[in-house]
Each structure stands twice: as structure tokens, then as C-alpha cells.
Image 1: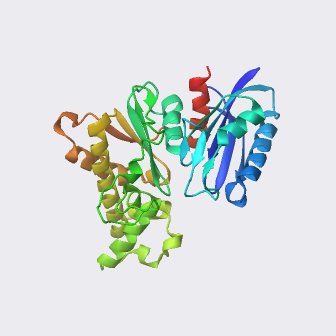
Image 2: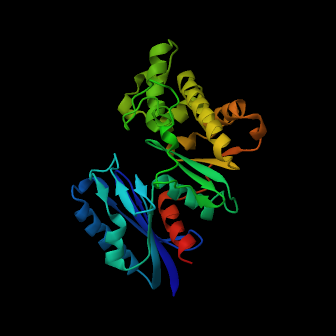
Image 3: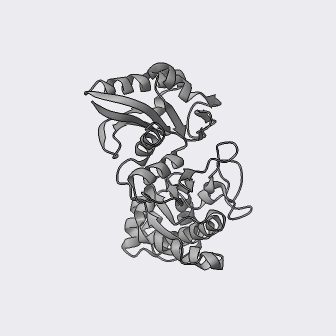
Length: 315
């Protein structure tokens, strides 16, 4: 009988869940629309029903359940006041899944799940020290030291997105100003474009694109086509990310920093300025010893990383 793990990726818009084997192959997948559930209990009911339906779709043995979610804590299997979820407070996600399925359950935040996916199924296979930076609506990071995710004292370590890079800078959703994710994220680069449009007089197709209609893909396409505003936006974004990575390298010296998420799909537009400014700002003994790469995960890193926790801890 085939052994499979359940991987769950809880997002602010959709929740995706799948059955994953030890090599990262997906055998069945489904999703539910997260935002339609005003009640966490109703969400859990439909999620469990969906998992049950998947597990009945073939002959298999489910060995455990892994979950990646915003503000999720590996230590207590709970979600804590996630800003992009409708439900507030401390949500005992792990307890509900254990009571329903009587299986081992592991919960962590989405960036740590991405790091776990990279470790077992991606470019970090065999690496002991690396980190993953997720560049989506916000900026998350999963840090691996000596082969283990860094959780810190309370379980919330690794929040690189909330390093202050510009004191009194842009207002962040966390309430502080100048956080890295207000500049280096899909949302942050859009804010940068708006400022550049106001600052420079050169022609740009971006002047005709509403803020709400601007996407990372469209921005990258325009940059590749030679749009100077788009190119400058990536240069500025890569510069701030590279400087921040240099600071983190001084603390834990990863072998490789992997970039994932929608903004990373710009490739060298972001990668080259990021690598350049990291090297420029590194403490001398670390120079030319850390590489920045695009993630080696081709599928959904959230569900793969969530399932990877099961394969790491159960077998």
C-alpha cells in the first residue's frame, strides 16, 4: 500500500491540499476558497471533508498531515492573529486535525514550509545551511541552520520581512515603518513604481496602468522590453534585498539564499542587483561564499513543504 502525506497550504484567498509521496510527487489535489468562511469551525469542517475525500480516491495509507499557514507556530500547532485571514486570535488548527484523523500533525508558517520543500525536494537537497525568501504579497523567510529550521524562543523566528531597512519609511501592515517587505514584495515594488512615475519624466507604459491592475508579471515583461521605470524598480528592489541579505549572512552565513514566489519569476532582473548589493555590503570574510538562486521547486512549495515535514519527522 502506497504511503502518502497530506500537505496543506492555507492562504488568504485559497487553501490547497494534496497527497504527496516521499519524492514530492502529487497524487491528488483539491482546494477550497478560504475567504468564504467567516467561521474557522466551518472552514475546518470543509477542509477535513476535502482531505477525507482525497484519501478515499485510491489505495493508500496516510502517515501524517503537514500544514503551512500565515503566522503559524511549529511549537503549538496554532495560527496566531494572521493579518490576511478573516479569523482572529489563536486558532488551534493542529488539535482539530488530530481529533479528526488521529494522525501526527505538524504546523508551521508558509515561509518555513517553503524552506522545508527546498530541503527535501528542491535545490537545497544535501545542504545544511541555507535560507528561502518568499516574495509574494509580503516577504517571508525560512532559515535553516545545521539542517534544522530556525524557530527561536517563541516559534516565530525568521521574520526577515520585518527587518527595518528605512527608519520612518513606508508604513507596514504590522504597524511599524520601513519594514523590508514594504519595499521588497509584489506590493512593495508596485509602491516603488508609483514613486518613480512621480519622480521621473521619461515615457513609460506603466503611467497608463492603474495600481490595482499592475502585476509582477506585467512589470517584468515591461522591464524585459526596455521600460526604464520598470527596470529602475527592479534595480531598487534588488538593492534593498541584497543589503538585507548581507545583514542576515553576517548572522547565520547560509550557503545559498533561494528566492521564491511571484516576484522571483523576474529572474535576473531581481537576481543580479540583489547578488551585487549583497556582495558589496558583506563583511569581508563572507564575500563570494554565498550564492543567491531562484527556488528549485517547480510545484506548489506550500503543499510540498507542508508534506515534507511529515516525511522528515514521521519516518
